Length: 97
Image (cartoon, rainbow, N blue to C red; front, side, top):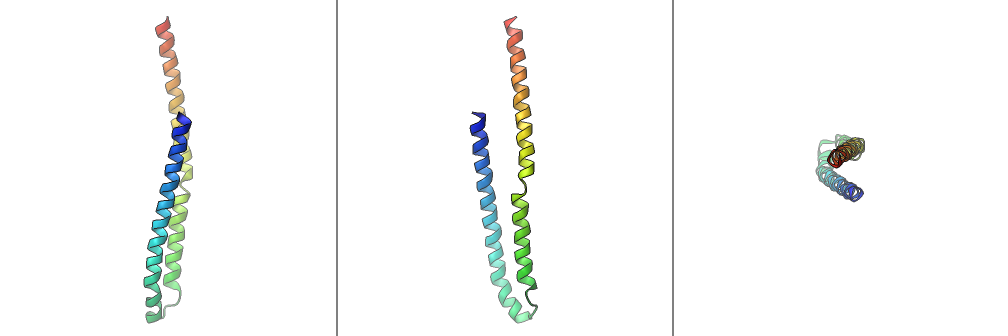
């Protein structure tokens, strides 16, 4: 049952990451749509669109690199489950005596 919960949480995290990535790139596409006419009018070159793309790439990296924290959380959850098992076993041993 614990494995099934972990699989469900991994799927939920993945869908959350995909949703966050789609929002990031959707907003970035909107920024690019605004930047292109601004570049033509101000003649600043590709600085604004490049900044929008780099910002979206950095945000996407930040969303997807959070996996290390999730593995730490999983390790802590496993430790807690292990401790609960030990306590439950000790309680059963005390009750049987």
